[in-house]
Image 1: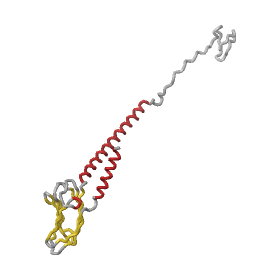
Image 2: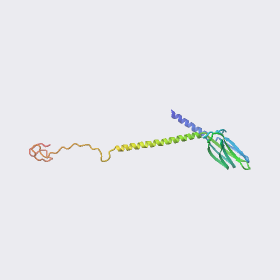
Image 3: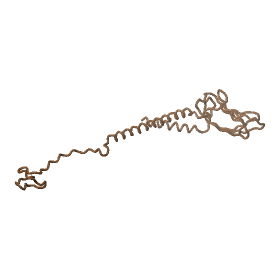
Image 4: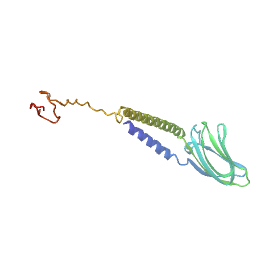
Length: 204
């Protein structure tokens, strides 16, 4: 009963992760000359604090070079100077509010296109990776133990087998001595003779 429940929970988790894998925010903006454009990023496109361990993935492009700074509670996390595009994935190392700010140092208005996605399952992925690593290590240890046991069993069986030239030979009954003289008269007889040639006594 437990196995179907666990399988169902895993399927629901995977479907939920896929459902939230699309960009949480995608938009266009105009960055004025000698000005900047700032957004507060958040989970599912809603501005707000990001949780430590989450992953922030973003892409952006502009018609003229802009400087992008991604900042968190303790200051700058990533920065890109005089670029017209960029993309990255940042692991959130501190829970708090994060901002993306594009600065236009030129004298013309710049068109900006951006999108970002916050993967709140980042910590879950880390736990799953750790569990998978533990399962792999345990499987390797079990396989090694099984191989060692099989080898020891095979070697033990080989020691019990008799070596060539040492097969067991059952003892045979001693052969009865063949008479060379007649038991009645003592005359010499032939081993193949059944009757004594002197007295006629039956020898066999």
